[in-house]
Length: 444
Image 1 (cartoon, rainbow, N blue to C red):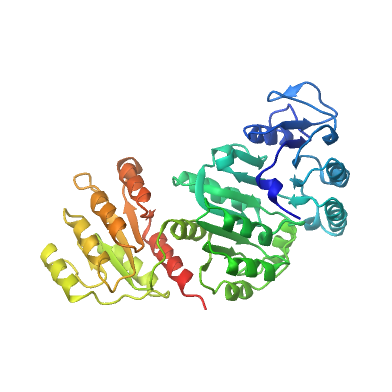
Image 2 (cartoon, rainbow, N blue to C red):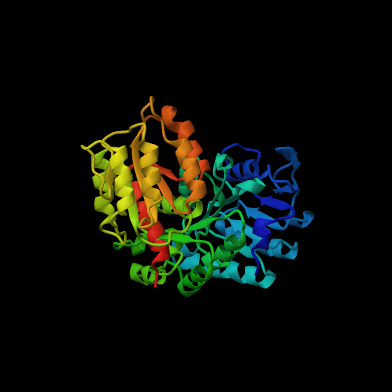
């Protein structure tokens, strides 16, 4: 089976389309109608039109490559049979009540899967909120306002579509977007192993993030992840005993996290332990150069946040080398005596020469990654000009942790992001992003 019709459908049938706002079939129509293809609302109980598209009685009256199935679970076998007869190549099954719902649900999912195999239909789901490919205006989902998710460079593949939606909207709130988002649900025949290679080949995708509850194709998941050229970060849920809840959610098998963690101990792969870390790892892996090593240089305008950063990183694979003698001499010229000019470097407060301090540390040959903490001061701003020259001349990751009111710092923060300098809003998030970069180069 090929998932191409999920990515490039020529014609979309919305089966169970509705005129009634708030109904799943209406929300799906409102999301997909922006896509540049023929949209066919299918519902024999309706007449007239919805969003300007005339209702048809059957998918047989369409030439759709993709079907969005907005009907109850018990109708899905018959609906998918009709899709197969009509030549549909991919389908999204939103309904729950399949393998996650016990023996009868298992039987229903098996019966539906056999029909999909018979007609070679790639099925996303069942039990999913769908997917989104913003740069195509392709939103195969019933989630309201999902069209607000913007284009970015992070590809999102999650077992729970709810997690995928959460990650996508959080990225939007923080000023970013996604190259694509897929919620796998029960993984009838479209799995991590099917989608990761496609995103790996996508020039718009600079990193991939995964949310995993547990999957039967763990070997294939790890194999395609290890073979990918695109860096990948994964959050495997299940540190504690949540097997029954996960099984009732996406029919996830109970599996030890250690097997995933061992499999992700590989160059270009990172394991994280929260959705926030997953977002930040995806951003920094997408936006930053690959570091040459684990040597971190920290520059902070306040000692307290610098101590938090250093304390966290000393519990990871990060190392804090001594700065070169030439670096220390230049810092002594720039900084007053009350500051700390070892590594970390503490300037005491933001100052006119803060950008020069960052520049000096970043150019030190002993440093592979630079993490900066600075409080915003209206009279000084951020050292955007120095950072622009630095990012062009030094092929090292430079990360900034910024503190201040959004309305004051947003413009300069955005300028830093455009120069390939990821920004974070707490010391811990900046430190965790640095740890992700180091993990991505230190796998066995």
